[in-house]
Image 1 (cartoon, rainbow, N blue to C red):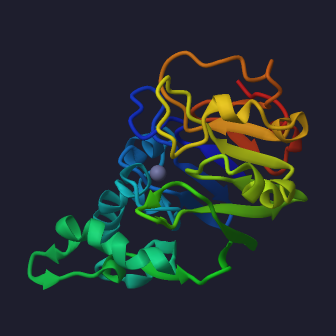
Image 2: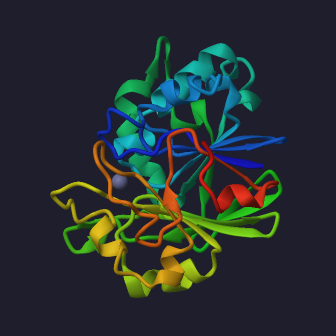
Length: 264
Ligand SMILES: [Zn+2]
């Protein structure tokens, strides 16, 4: 099983595609978030919509869901219209399902001659509280992370914890640093794929490099950084991190060394 970073950039990147990740396994392909760049970033790897068997959605920003209209409509007209078993599986926390459809409804709510729903296009599998899902024999646990507040409440956003071939990993998806709250989950993982903003002006809804750099060396030594802005970046290896993930970088669970070094 491989973890392939189709993109490594922030929401508005022009250089590195949005941070969507592909899990490529003999049993199928799971896309972790599907932003508007997904069709192009997948094409760079020779893949099309029909090659994606399942999708996981962490939260509802467009760099994470903006490609679902492409994925849903393309797979519908190329096969699932006549054979619903060809619909991609859609794993999304149950608290996000209604708002996800609210976001997609304008473009997908009607097909000529019929009214469509989310499950017209996707095999929707809501994730329960403290739950997760199984893909390719691996259990993926969702971890609620702090991304941003809606007034006085945290808007649901979920990272992923899973273990394969003895390698426990944590993908934060979009998240603030939350040093104390996140410690337990960081400690569960040998490798952390960490959201890392590099903008001069902080958005405050993402972990910023200047905050992450103050974490303990032991934690930084397990962190790969992604979701960065275009342009210059600090020397993160000098600062104790494993590295900046490059667009297209592959982490192969059958080659643990690929988690410990840069692959060119
Ligand atoms: Zn976001």
